[in-house]
Structures are given as C-alpha cells and as structure tokens.
Length: 330
Ligand SMILES: [Mn+2]
Image (cartoon, rainbow, N blue to C red; front, side, top):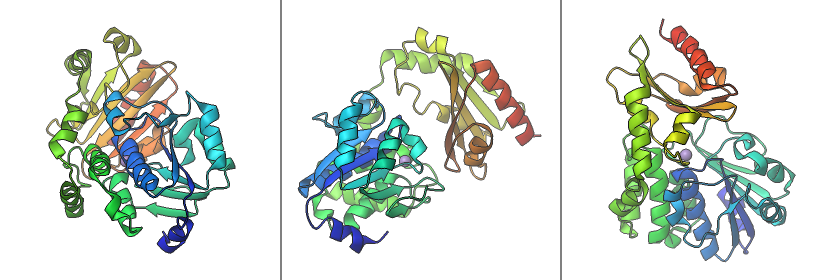
C-alpha cells in the first residue's frame, strides 16, 4: 500500500464507490460505513454498494438508508460505479464474492483499492492492503484511516462501525485472531466515544422468538457428532427453515455451537437452499478449513473460518461431507 499515492488521489474531493461481499456481515457493513462516513466528512461523494441485502440488526449503521443494494437497484449501482473515480473493495479477496457487481467493477476505469484480510487476494487492484493476520477488515480500516491522517474524523458513530466489524469477526474478542493491537484499537475507539455494551446489545440482543425456536430445533434435532468425536455437524433443511419462519441472518453464528463441544476440532453448518446447500466451517488450531472448503466444497476463507456450497440437496451434501470427514479423521 503506497499511502502517498492515495493521499495525492484524495487531494481533491472524489466520487467514491465502496463495495463489499455478498451476504454482508458485521465486518462488511461496519468497514464500509466507517470508511464511507469519514470520506463524506472529507467532502467526497460516496456510494456504498452491496450485492444483496443484509440482516436487520445491522441497519442502525446506516440510519439514512444510503446503502445501495445491487440486486434491488442494479441500474443505480451501475451508474455510480461507472462514474466513480475511486473504487474500494472491502472484506473480500476475489470479485467472485460480489456477484453481479463484479462485471461492473471490472469494466470500471476507477482507481481500485483493496482492503481485506482473506487469503490469496486477486491481482488487478491499484493498491492493496491485505493482512491475513488481521482480526477483521474493520481493524485494517482503522489503520488505513489513521495512516491517511484522517484519525480526527473517527467520531462516536465511526467508532461504533469499526467496533462492530472487529467484535463480530472475532466472536467478541475470543478467536485467536484477537491480538493486543486489537484491544488497543478497541480502547482507542472508547476514547472516541464508543460504548461497547450499546453495540453488543444492538448486534446480539435482537433475537426474534422464531429465531430462538429455529436454533433450538437445530441443536436438539439436527446436531450430530462424527464417530471420531472431532467433528460436529448442524444442518437445516429448506423445509425446516420454512417451518420456523427463517429469515436471513437467523443462522448467523449457529456453527459455533458445534465448535464449543469438548474435543471437537472442526464444526460445520449446512443450510439447504433451493437447488444448493451452503456450508459454514469453523475449526480450532491447525485444522485448515480454508483448504478443506477449497478442495471439496467450492469455497474458501480463512484457516479457522470458511464457507462453501454444493449444488445438490441436503442428503447429497451430507454424504459428500461424511466422505471428507472419514478421510480427515481415519
Ligand atoms: Mn471480515
């Protein structure tokens, strides 16, 4: 990352587009809004674009509903990208993670900046801030804003967005990606007005009754342990999701229950959708779920957290998963 190049780009106000990945999570929305708000304070015109909608419990970060959702307003998004001087790619490593936004970015002549913490970032960006040891993209956004000399623009609202990204990507500061520097950033954000308990409440204390029933059902009826005792699997069929009134975001974090079982090294959550099954993987220590997801489930991510998908039904997905687990834990 060449900061003096970027500083000269931002000497005058620019038209900026900030993009992030499909099924945006706390880190995706938190990073995008934090950077967006700071750039707006610097008199840039900013569009934040997401490929598809995000869970309601993140809405408070965008109180004026300024975020453009590509699958709802593709023309507006296309226009913003075609007019942009600068495009930021946040919290994703490859354009395949942004669905129908990808061809629009490819066609754009804008100055392209990637800020991300996933393994193996694509080439094709003018500037790259990629640190796979970072807890979250939000942590990198904090560093970026400070390095650019914009630290004074981190107010209470921006602090809350950055904190949300760090908190959600570190499982509330408990994953091994949490470092001393992560806590130092959190402390600095508190000095700027952040009240951590408020953010925690907005993100985690917003469960609907139906979500709790869905999670209860998944754990009591559908949690299974591989015969090795080292792998836990939770699944939900499309039929079950419909029965419990599933809404996007309802199964967020469900996979972590499997990983919390003593002796379990890898946990999976399988969510059946129309004509496909989505996988979430979590692991402890040296079990590399990025590699497993890449090799078998058309996915990837980080060593201890990854995702994937198979174009089949739940039975087919379970069968494939069992083959992989039997190989892994002979
Ligand atoms: Mn992230």
